[in-house]
Amino acid sequence: MAIGTTTAVVSGIAIAASLASAGMAYYGQQQQAQAADRMAQYNYAVQKQQMEMQARMQSIAADQQYQAGMQNAQIAQNDATRVEQEARERAKRMRAENERLLGEQRARFGKAGVTSEGTPLAVMAESAGLMEMAVSDELYKADMERTAFNRKADVERWQAGYSLIDKAAADYNFASARFRATPILLEGQNTATALRTNSYGSLISGVSDAARIGMNYNFKGR
Image 1 (cartoon, rainbow, N blue to C red):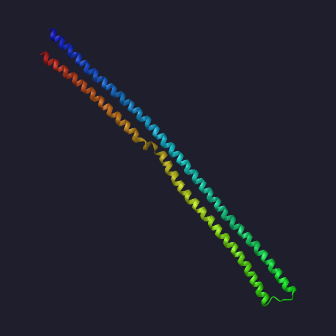
Image 2 (cartoon, rainbow, N blue to C red):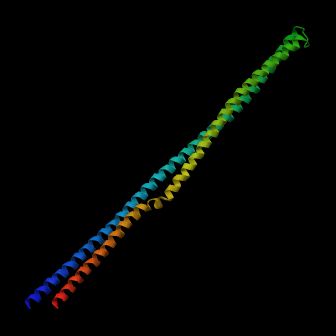
Image 3 (tube, one colour):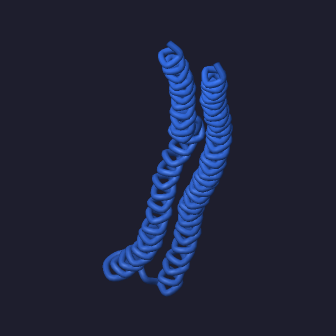
């Protein structure tokens, strides 16, 4: 009788120990799973915030580059317009001065009693041609300078267009930060899921061990 009682006590202790061990393993792994969940959420939030901040800074920088490029393009365009207007004004003044000089030349010929035919006419024609050539040279140099400014404006606008592409990419990165940071969240959640699964396995294993101990006791008690 004493032996049966002792066996029952030992068996009960073993069953209780097995259940307690299973319960502790289950509780510990559940706690680890919760910690893994919290860490996953934290890492996800940090990564998402960093991605958004980086994308926002890139967007601002790209927008500033675009604005600067367009401003430089406008300055170059204004310079081209200025060069053209100044060249026209110089040409106008040069032609007026040429007319004055030709008039003086005709007046001198007239005072000298020289007619405007033959050699004097050729001289005045040559003078007029040389004067107009000087005007044409001035306009040509101005046109070359104006063309250079226009090309610079085109290059600035072209580069500014690339800045818009960079800005669009940065804005997309900002909007998609939560999706790009998701793998970090999923990794932590997978770890938590594995811990929970293991906790269920530990619990089931402990209950099974307790049941096996009870069955062995019943078998021996017979």
